[in-house]
Length: 595
Ligand SMILES: Nc1ncnc2c1ncn2[C@@H]1O[C@H](COP(=O)(O)OP(=O)(O)OP(=O)(O)O)[C@@H](O)[C@H]1O
Image 1 (spheres, rainbow, N blue to C red):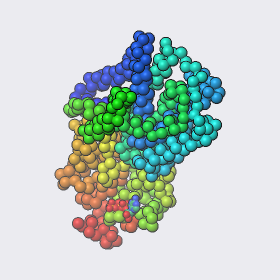
Image 2 (cartoon, rainbow, N blue to C red):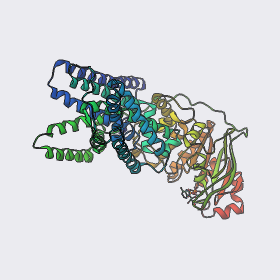
Image 3 (spheres, rainbow, N blue to C red):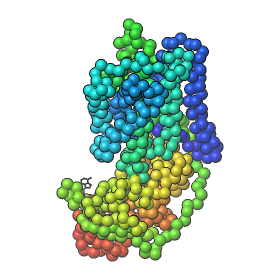
């Protein structure tokens, strides 16, 4: 398994490996629950109050760092707004308990809901705008913190002086009020860790990691990125709101300055990075380590020295363990040859002339450059249609528009009798169109196996579990001769293998139509030969292919029909050799076809 931390798939003995994996999977929640039970017994053993307050803080940071990680670590959307969602929880519980005299425990689900609702409101806007990624998203979420602080500080919610919770009775869960607060935080920490673990092992989690590595490619492979990010943000915010509610009672006096400051977002970022943001337990480990350090130095004459030591540890950690502590403890790879998959489903070669894809009047321009101009063409079921044309003639744009990567300016795209123009890329992937990229775009921190599993789970009819996705992915890794690389990261593959990985990802969704964008570009003659053989085998099982290519020998060897583009428009269409002899095609194409 790669740095991604997905559970490792051993292939040499699949049955034994699956059993070992299942045991390993069950071990994690058992460990979380076991630790929870042990820690819950602590207050009844009458330990010094110091331990409760220390453990309370460690658990507090575990919840905040782990919940932050669900969106920011898994999906890669760095949020600096966690303080806002935490603060929403603080003030919701404080307001309901103090001003409306609600029993305290009842305020907590509302605190979670309010924080989640604010998060979803922010995400619904931010995630719609394609450009709001990376630092822009971080800044936007930071701005939410200040906006919320201003609203709370200037309305009766707080109004300026802060809110006292001294009179709010602490629910009696343990022998003392401190222990009750500690137990409340323990429950929150156990639930948060379990939620984070469940997401990490799920199809949903795999989708978030694909978004993290390459959001556009994830969409093209069927991952509904907008909905998934919103869901991750909602869960992350709800957990932060819940802990905010508990903390309001713990501190018993809340102010906007103490609540909505940069401490929460900065600390959770540091904790997650130190522990490893791609692992469910990483943020918790970072949280415990930093809380210990803070606790060791707080109040002593070495407080400043302590902060310096934390900074130094972080710098060393980031330099020597860029994937965090958990990343450094990556599972060792066990590789080996997989069992040969079952025979591939033979599909009927659809040479009955049925039209699978029909494009009518398709147009697309980029700031005045007419990349596609009123293109109409048909792709018949079971054929390999070659798409040719000189550089810049619109071939890649055609693939980008048909696959939903770009929205067309005009025209219709009918797949199997359904107009798919204007649908988001993930819906087009589900409708049965898969594509490869001219320059391979693998999910860089996921294993080769999981790269393919994403397509198997999300595109086409989509398999419902990660395990099923991986089973299907193995078939296609065998088909593309990549089975020995299942556990490698894409960076360990050469270009030839990366191109085959693109093919395996495209095929794993069992698509009706595959759009191949210059899969042979950059390969040696021997590699081209093996790729041509592979494409033939893909067609032989009945998959329809649109083949964009400059390597003319391969075009002649593979295609049933070709279409030639020139300056975004269709120049010719017909039998390959005949079309290439036409004077108009030769003059448009000269210098490429005859190179
Ligand atoms: N994202 C974009 N932004 C601006 N212009 C673009 C974009 N994508 C394509 N174009 C322009 O559209 C035209 C068609 O480009 P496209 O990449 O589709 O051609 P192509 O036939 O695939 O070329 P090649 O064979 O070199 O890959 C070119 O003029 C190109 O510069």
